[in-house]
Image 1 (tube, rainbow, N blue to C red):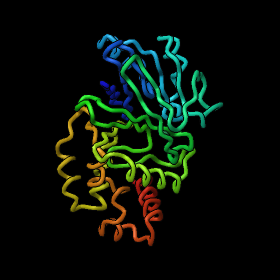
Image 2 (spheres, protein in one colour; image 1 turned 135 degrees about the horizontal axis):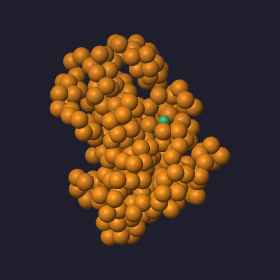
Image 3 (tube, rainbow, N blue to C red; image 1 turned 90 degrees about the horizontal axis):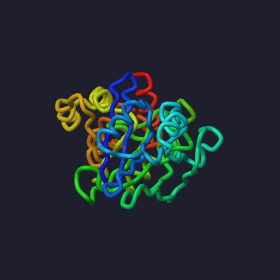
Image 4 (cartoon, rainbow, N blue to C red; image 1 turned 90 degrees about the vertical axis):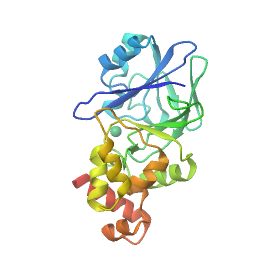
Length: 256
Ligand SMILES: [Fe+2]
C-alpha cells in the first residue's frame, strides 16, 4: 500500500503519515499534528482521510484528533491502553487487530510499550519501495539510530524488552517510519560513543533535508541501542548486562 510522509521541519521534527488504498483513495492519517500539512497532502494526492490513528497518548501524536475528525469526518482509532487518556476515540486498538482502509490497505497492530505504556505500532507491506517490503509505523518507540525516551510515562526495562522483541521478530527488511525525524542528531550520538562506526558516518554524510527512513537491518549497524554487544559500546557503557547497558545509553542520550 502506498505511504506518504509529511515532515514538518519544525523544532520537534514531527513526521505524520498517510497510508492509503489506491483502489478507493481512502487514507489513514497516522499521528497527525500539523493539520494544514496533512490536509494539503491528502488534497494534493486526491485522498479522503477516513481514519485517524494514534500510536500513543502524547499530545503531539493524539492531541489533534477532534480537530481533524471535525474537518474530515474520519473515525479515530487509538490504543486500548490509553482509554480515558486520549480524547475523541471511536475504536480501541490492541495486539493483533487489523485496521482496514478502503479495500487494499491493511495495517496490523502490535503493542510495543516502553516510551509510554500504551504505545502501539502499525505493521504494513508495500509503502513506496516494492509490494512486499514490510514497514512499521513506529511512533516514538524507534527512531532512526535511536529509541524513544522514557521520561514522560515510560519505563526503561519495558522499552528494552520491546526493542529486543522487535529485533528478534521483525523482518530485517522492515522499514521504519517514526514520529520524529531525529536521524541526523542520533547519528551524532552514535559517533560520539562509537567514532569508528563507518556505517553511521557514511549515512550522516548522505542526509539531506527530506527524512531518510532506515530499515531494521540498517539499525543494526548504526543504532547504539541495538549494538549492546559491540566492544566499543561495552567499553563506553561498562555495565555487566545488556539491559543495564541499554538503560545507561538511554540516560546518556537524555543528557546529550
Ligand atoms: Fe511520544
